[in-house]
Image 1 (spheres, rainbow, N blue to C red):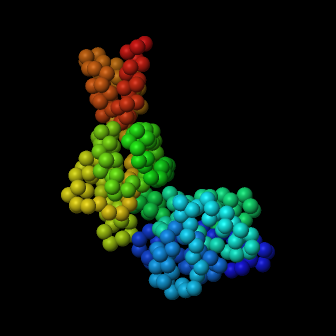
Image 2: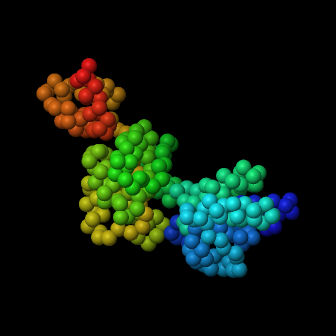
Image 3: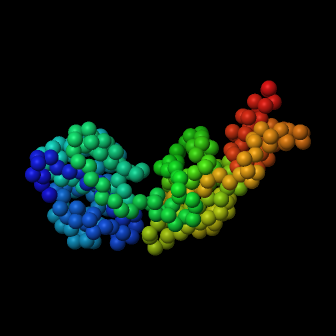
Length: 281
């Protein structure tokens, strides 16, 4: 697929997220025809190529640790007229995976970037969740530090849109524990091992899901966490009105925050700040 115009094309190719049969005919054709393939892990990509009988391809490693340097090298290859396919270990490149830098550089250099659509854990999980999909927010992998994690959960969960995040198995228990503390009554979904043999979707309150996962033993694979839009028990009821009702009952600021959170679905920390403001007025 050497370019006659002197400049090659960069193909952003989606690959299977588990089941190797989940790849398009076009993606297979592109992988056969390009001059080289930039991949997150050459061993993973080689397994896919061998499965489909694609032999003799030049593979170049392209991951988060060498992305900046390798992107420049690949741009030079493209300028020489060579075609490049960008793939990740699983799913669509640039979606919580390496690829942003080379795509951005290619755009700035006037090089054609061609998407070859296909699998995405985000879209697969969302489409089968049963939660509203007309408006949704994708936050990628949740922050590792607890402070940043709490801020993210409070900012993006329980709003007027569905929220989707990725989480790793060794942090999932901590994350679900924090979610159950902030949003004890929220219904959520957890998807794991999508398209694989042990694919599973759990739906319920955070504590219920955590308990069920613990019973299964060691957690494996990446998880997709899905939160539906906020459901307010007292529709459109003014937060201040709810707070004042509980204050009249003699509850402390902390108690008001807890009870008002159950009614409105808003984070306790956010409500507590408002309680303090009202008390100081």
